[in-house]
Length: 193
Image 1 (tube, rainbow, N blue to C red):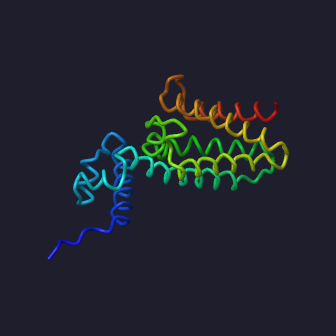
Image 2: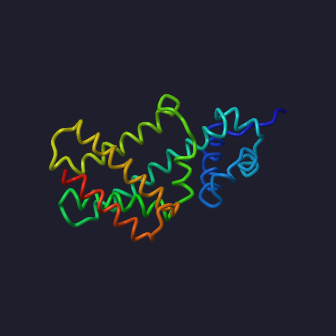
Image 3: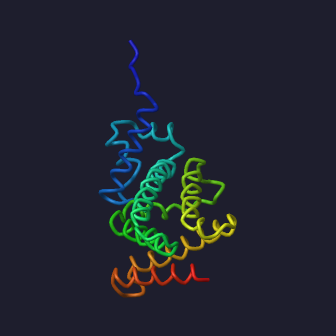
């Protein structure tokens, strides 16, 4: 009688869940093929069969992280009582910084893998595009040029991300409050212009 194998979809989900848990609790460096497959109770080759490799698993985890981070950020922005664009965007940008601090391992994993746009999976690109479009809705009441809104959303994200990276690395010195003040200054300056 032949041995019954594991359901590939269930095993795929299990591998992603385990990789996510490793990244959350131990960081990306500890998320190895061997660590994931050992905890999943499967052979090394199973990961290679279900994914193109560990990077593919990490991209699946990163897609989940992007979704979670987006929900976290927009909950904070929507909780902002002020209706001014600058207040909503400041709340969003500060939530990005808070997420990066509080969920550092997941946040850091988003930026470790270096892929070109064409190499990223469609699900990841879709989640990322939805986040950018959602950011544009925060200014759409006051600014009607959709193309400009998208460019402004991308530019603001890139600028805030730079402040967050440097702030978390303590490259510019200062405290979390200093980082938050720089974010506030950036957002208010961008919106005024």
